Length: 203
Ligand code: MD3
Ligand code: FE
Image (cartoon, rainbow, N blue to C red; front, side, top):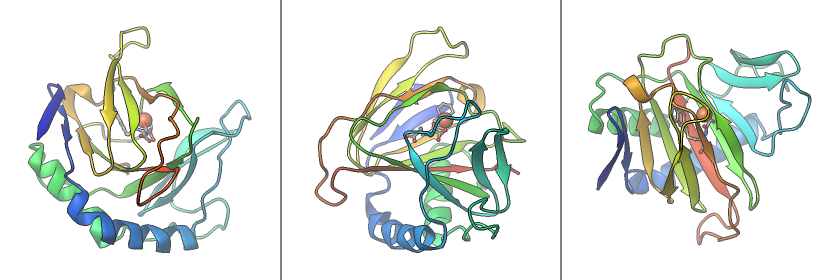
């Protein structure tokens, strides 16, 4: 099923389910080469979400701010390559949502535990805001907050399950969004963990 969130944003329920085995195998390889870490916010606090990246560019945060980097600051090495399964799923999901020729160059991998949250923010560090963002939810369910173009706009609450894919583009690309603190609802495959893959055209 497809749920519309806005003019250019939709949830593709269970779209990633046929890819899960390949995604998790590729994810293990990526996280071996670029281990998960808690990045610092510009204010100097460790983020509650643990993350890493793959693809030509990775999203990084530290005391100097947020930006995309071609290398992992923890190792000085390039980020692991974008796995074929990630690129294929992103292309298929973007296509199902009406965006053709999607070729993401960055994938941010976020890991959540019970109690982890992501406060309301906009994604505006990417050079080109015309390309959509494809987000893949794995493991424990979460409630996604989908706000407006101003921080104070009322946010819709969208439950996301294992295998759901969300595509955000066009007029909805700069909406405020976040994730409510996760409940402790262990998932049969991934245990007490939620993984979100956020694919972007960042460069
Ligand atoms: C909605 N991650 O890493 S999916 C992020 O579940 C982030 O880990 C969330 O927000 C997560 O920045 C949410 C990605 C997402 C990305 C861009 C959006 C959702 C968006 C742009 C507009 C609205
Ligand atoms: Fe975001």
